[in-house]
Length: 270
View 1 (tube, helix red, strand yellow):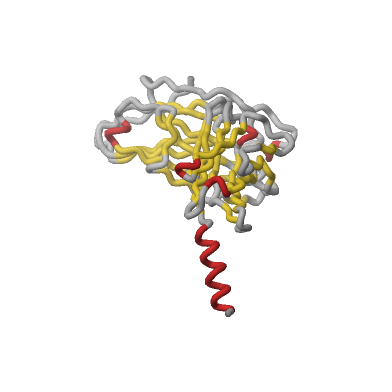
View 2 (cartoon, rainbow, N blue to C red):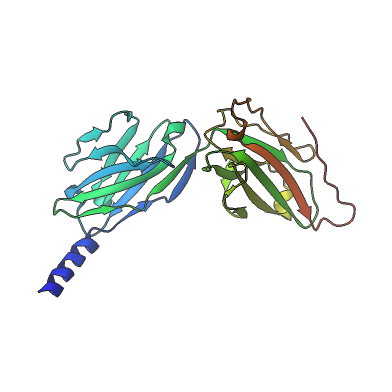
């Protein structure tokens, strides 16, 4: 009897498995982002869908409850630009966030509650809102070899930070290596991130940027380098703080290899 009950429970759980996508997405303020949760082996009109989010270092909080009858219950403080929807034919639920703002940066989970009583979670979607701080660089042409751009950030607290790379305003995932956040003796944190660029791309005239987001940094527009000049890193002014250890100190360097005799690499300040 116990084996029969266990098998029946296992089958009910398997029927309720659903997938959430994408696993991670980067978006700029003002844009629209759509999160998807797909159910399997059950009709969508028998599913109540909850959306929950959890910001780094914070407790999970409810976003909204989307009922079977399509009624919407938003949690206090959640604006109407959070819009749920249901695609019954494809067994999918969507959460659309319009006019994205910095406060929308979080991990979002779908939580399905079926009429039969089964409850399951999605895997979560990390929504990164890129706007806090950006430093840019342009490159001079290197005929052969490779280039490795290095972004070093130190002296920040707390230890949660996002370091991303862009090529011509497009977020890059290939060739990116970001180390672990390290705690220093002064109780502040540091991290290094690297972008390796193939020689043919290095000489293509593209613009590369290291994007850093931390709660201690003020919002500002991206800084765009001059793609025609030598290698430059443009650092925006970071306002002084009464607690110096809370503001990151970005240190950026550019390494090139395999350029051959006669290659040169210059630094400039705009």
